[in-house]
Image 1 (cartoon, helix red, strand yellow):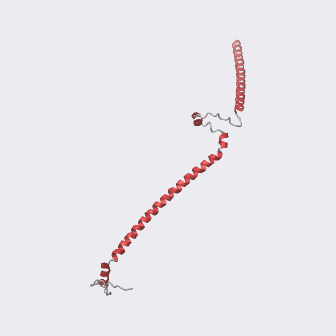
Image 2 (cartoon, one colour):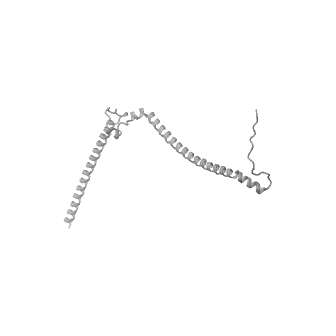
Image 3 (cartoon, rainbow, N blue to C red):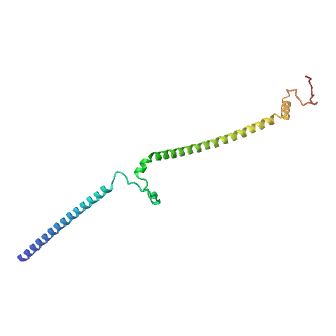
Length: 166
C-alpha cells in the first residue's frame, strides 16, 4: 500500500508541475498578445496622427458626379468661405415661407369679405325692390283710400303746358 501511495503522490506532483508549466506558458502567451495589441494600437494611433490635419486637403479641380453626390466638394474650407451665402439662402427661404403664408391668409380674408359684400348687395337689392313696390302710384292711392284722410285722387284732365316768354 505504501508503494501505491507513493505512486499517487508522485503522479499528483507531476500533474501539479505540468499544470504550473501550462499556466506559465499561458501567462507568457497572454503577455505576448498584450504586447502585440499595444504595438498595434501604437501603429494605429501613429497612422491617425499622420492622416489627421488641421485643414482639409484642397479638392482637385475635376468635379465629377461622384464627388458632388458623395459630398466631397463640401469641405470645411469651402463651407467657411461661403457661410454668408448659406445664411442668406436660409433667410430667403424663411421670408419666402412667411410671405406665402401671409398671402394665403390674405386670400382667405378676401374671400370672406367678398361673400359678405355679395350678401350686402343682395339685401340692398331686396330692400330697393321692396321700396319700389311700396312707392308705386297704385299702392300709394290704395293706402290713402284706406286712411280716408287725404284729398288726393287720380287726375281726370291731362296736365297743361304753360309757356313762359322770356
